[in-house]
Length: 461
Image 1 (cartoon, rainbow, N blue to C red):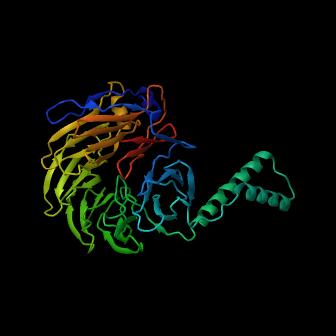
Image 2: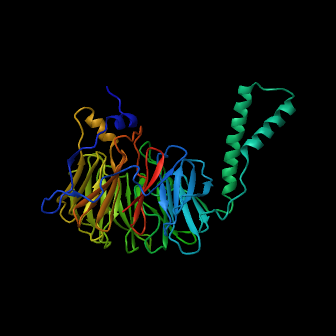
Image 3: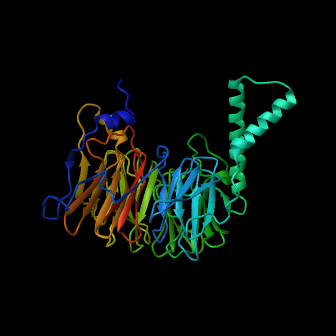
């Protein structure tokens, strides 16, 4: 049986579409001026010292002046204006999954980072420097001094291999100690943030959301007190206001309604719940749908909730959050859908999928309106589809933006029926796929992407 991996996908991949965007009258979308745009034509580029982390987490500050990029267990803060490194934030002992700037209410910036078990708050000044930074530990000097002290005490000498191994162990231990020292005077919470575009804050900035006990129960049910819990916190004090319990398997997505009155949670237990943010009461439970639920999105008017089911088959539902009635469902996606978004006018719902497709449909009827889909050759088609997905689906005004895991960013303008593309050229060879790693500036003037060639690129919109 043939084996597929990221390197083979990129080697065999060729860009060809089986379906592309069209206007309402069927007119095919045309390229916007100077499109498509290839690597080398970006407005700015930042080279990373190592390959992007599997999570490819990044975020821009609210004023678009700072960029936070995750590489493994560290966060690097860059100035957007000159791409100078302002700070390296060290403190996590696991790979970081999520990083997000809080809404700015005071001088400086607050950055929140999360692993699967820990959430850390970092206070930065306007330049992006850690206000509570500790003096860095020189692991090389300390490790060498420690080794020499041990050798003197034992009155012996190690061969170079043993000496190097012991020095390396010292450095690892010192790095862990240094990471813990960095957490002094910082707020650290046990738990995690949500996945797949989950909200961390309500729109009004009053509430914050974290998860605890969010490991899956598929390998065995736990006692009630150890089941997943959504913690609604005061965004300013971080104190827990409500503990929302009821889900019996991992919560995948958390989303506050645009009017900041309700919270929706989507979980692997096959249910979707609507909660009151004021009281913490569960207002509605949708399902069980008989399979894992993955992601969600609120309509702009807070009346409707769209959410995805990915097993035993993929279905995208739209429910009325007030009446708890099903409005529509779409079954035209044949693989996992974990990235969905409403257009600002509420007229369209767009969804990405695991088989490199984006579908736009009417959320009130479930009628398909537009479709963009990658074309695969017959050879290894099924396995190729498993590696090429569409993520980061979002609307910026009239523009629909998304990214494929082979690294291409696509943009379609509903008003002009023009499309744009930012991608590597034929000479740009990479040996891995990428997930997520796309952020649009708050003013909508540029986007930032983490790419598989160890670069962070800035593109003007």
